[in-house]
Length: 462
Ligand SMILES: NC(=O)c1ccc[n+]([C@@H]2O[C@H](COP(=O)([O-])OP(=O)(O)OC[C@H]3O[C@@H](n4cnc5c(N)ncnc54)[C@H](OP(=O)(O)O)[C@@H]3O)[C@@H](O)[C@H]2O)c1
Image (cartoon, rainbow, N blue to C red; front, side):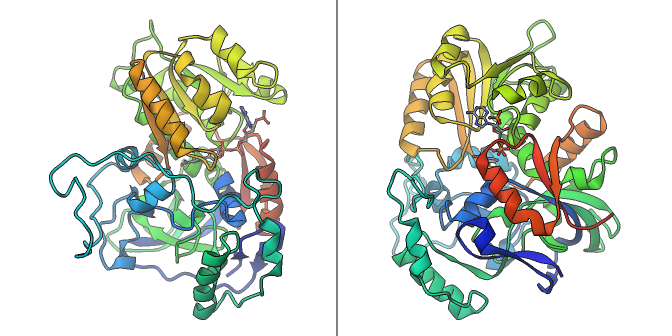
């Protein structure tokens, strides 16, 4: 099958290539094999390609056959790796919902944790990723250029992969991919093989977020003609939009949906909401981006919120027009974070933040009402120490902090998202469409940071 292969970390145009003859993945029990109609491009994928993410990411539930166990549920299993990645274990588990993931077998030499000994688990601030991002000009003095001096190794052999791991210990900025690494988390496609008693039978159009955006999975991601993944991660695709457009939604929509769901003070309209007399006021940073443009629409549709959103000057009209239709658009280039915090002091019930830094973390306390919630989405700029301080400061002021959250595959949440699309309450905005051979350029465009909505990767016709 055709697929985009990642050979090692580095600039997208140098390290990814389109191959015509990648093997079609084999479906495991509990999985569906899907003919990919479209995928999408997310910032996490350029970060993976560039080697900016921790080598070890949290395991995602549903892939337990790798360890000989399986429960078919969706959600992130966040343990030590979660701490490495800077992820709040408690909140990530809440996102995952359902049963708590089974812990790995205990090592007899390891001291029992406080929790296992019956005490309260000690809270540790999330640690920042071990390897600094390898971008030229990075403030930590990244030695990105050194990777050119390393020998080219056969990434498609096990020995090559082992050597790659050994090399990455010596040189954290270069990693060779495991054999046949195919990236990408988002997929919309048609089921071609499934368990006879599974929820989706051959011929069903589905959409899903898989764990294919991560570096350390042995199985294939979605920039390919076929992908196999647990059926529990999928939902029937919305029927009111083209199947290819549905590929723009899963990762970003789940991020906003799962993160807002953690805010203790937000109540869904279907559960009674806050009533039309007192709609919640929600601030969504970066409303023109992938997560933001869906976050704005979900804040309105799910919580009946009045929405304020930030974007640059070129996106002010986009924010105000339907389908986003924000009540207030703020130009982050014209209004400084401090000015905005002064003019909107105590204005918001919740903040959905994918930006962080001076704009997000530093102003959250001033912008939130008493009892309001700062919903903090993890990104590579998230700093564990700062996060711990922001959380402590907010809680001392009677405000809530949730995060930093990490999106999890979640079929039932996607079914709710598809229902909103079909009810005309959520529409993905497609910035552009590329074929598989356009993925490298699309990654570079996403990395530049000003895509409006999503770039869809069209793989095949329906
Ligand atoms: N933890 C998780 O599970 C998770 C999940 C998804 C995404 N993320 C992370 O969240 C971040 C955003 O993801 P995304 O998919 O939304 O990215 P994106 O689509 O690439 O975001 C691009 C948009 O961000 C806007 N923007 C850039 N800087 C801004 C600022 N300072 N204030 C307001 N808007 C700004 C741009 O608008 P202008 O052109 O108008 O500036 C552009 O429309 C990324 O770092 C990503 O890795 C994390």
